[in-house]
Image (cartoon, rainbow, N blue to C red; front, side, top):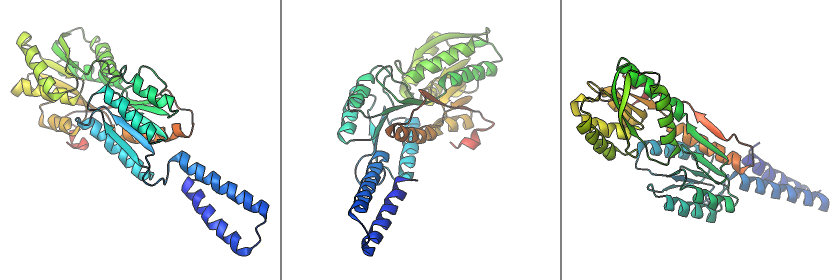
Length: 330
């Protein structure tokens, strides 16, 4: 039974008893207790609270299609449940996330969802919620401290392995490759690197001749790739740990991208999928950002109700190639 159903039953039952004139003082007391219990249930679930904030979602940035997808999914789930969700953008500033968590706690949110700018730097932000006894769920990236109820993220290690296999197979098992890493300090960058390294070891004919972070940023991806090409003009393949960096690298490669130089990306954003369809990217390992956002809202509500949660939830990834890209839009 939902809190709304309980509330409706209370509102229908009480007037009926009042009209019969049969309510004894004891029964009136019981009815009052039931009504108060229903009100408490509404507060706990965060339903029908008008303009008050029920949940907070602190995103690292909204200057990235992947995180826009998370926002879209989370908002859709909140709307479906009749919740008010306060979504903030830290603009990749860890200090902003601390301030945003303070705002959430001052709004008496029932739970907070954080997508950390940095897995270490997010610890103080989580501490703000912990001290206010507000449950915290992390999304896409883990937090290296504080108390977090659960971390919901793509299986980045498996995705990194899949990217390595895809790139190596596209090169026929031999060649020189470059690796554009994600933002240092994030669990997503670390896990994708781990998976890629594990996967590429299975191909002794493939040599990683250059690797450098480009911070999940398109412009930096272009700049880093340009510098790599000056030292390694004979690169035959590139793995970029997200679509934005891959698209920047593709621009630096020009007409070679997807042809003479195979480029494998990670995320499956609309721009990334479009580039796969056009042939400028060889493949992208697609995440499901909207599903991540929806699940984060669901798990935040469970945390608010005091339910026991698993430490981590891994959402599967899917390989997008020229053969199936049409099914993913873009």
